[in-house]
Length: 453
Image (cartoon, rainbow, N blue to C red):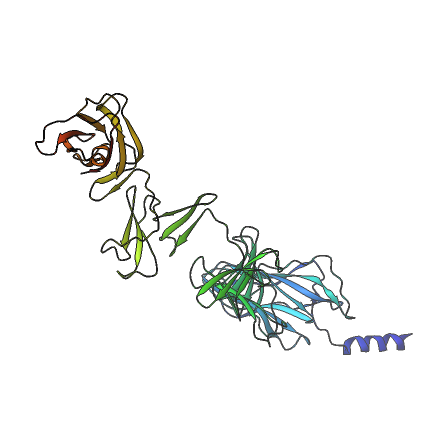
């Protein structure tokens, strides 16, 4: 029995003792507590090795500058820095997953202040020593853009971190914030980042379609061989927009034909240009951008070699395209609704009337406005004059008359105009030789043409 006890004591003495204590899962231990300002090595603790560990370590200090390292070792002899903190008042960080066997805190230096403490808690990771995974919850620190919570051994500044302001989870690439996902604005990309579609996602194929920011606020650029935006679907039952050189085409989504565009109005030449509007079915409105007038509609070109239609108040003018003069009009028939005018109305569409005079029951027969009409003098055979009622002229009326009845009978009388107002013309039957008033024969026919001036 004594011999066995001696052997057991010998083996115990000869076995290496790696640490004073073990940092059991979930227990907060103090590795460093010092009032010194220089380099101080803290107490080492053994780390349970059943699972890969997550080490949450906290530093508290009261100086103006600080440098503390978390150090690890597999033999409890040679230690290496595995993480560090440099905030003057300390902080809290997560390190792991790790299979390191021993951990301690070491102060490099502290400026000012009276004390530095470093504590850590070891939590079980989800990777066990047999290669299996066991996980119900994993909590990590928020991280920063330069030290993400989740990163990679080959690029420790690339990974995921949380921005508390904005409630966002961001993707950092080489220490630069590139992608953000938050509960307010959704997914946000940095201005230089684009969405690319390729045949594979391993980065070896050139992108055949891209979606990127156009260099300034509000601009989105679709890139690719032939940029095309299909809306709603990809068949001919849906519309699309296609870029062809410097032009934009409205196409069917399968590019088999043109698509229709429906709008209340269209701007020609951009948002500050002229407007083509749809007043109603079959009615098109052309206006300026302010929708309070219109200039002219040019045909064929913009110089004096081409014609144009110009709005002038309530008038339509036939002008040269450069508006340097009036253009000619050729038509088989011109139908007027009111008058034909030069500088003022010349011929009116409204028919003349009998105002006064003439014989019994006189009448205007077969009128064609004021340009050509006939008057039946009426019965009685004693009337020598009469007043024709006419539309309102600017100044007065100039009428030309022929007594067809007297001319056919070779009578020596003729009908002449003797007076005019803006709305009437007075005619009289006169002796051709003496000019004396001479009665018309009963029911004489007078042909007349009246022009306003």
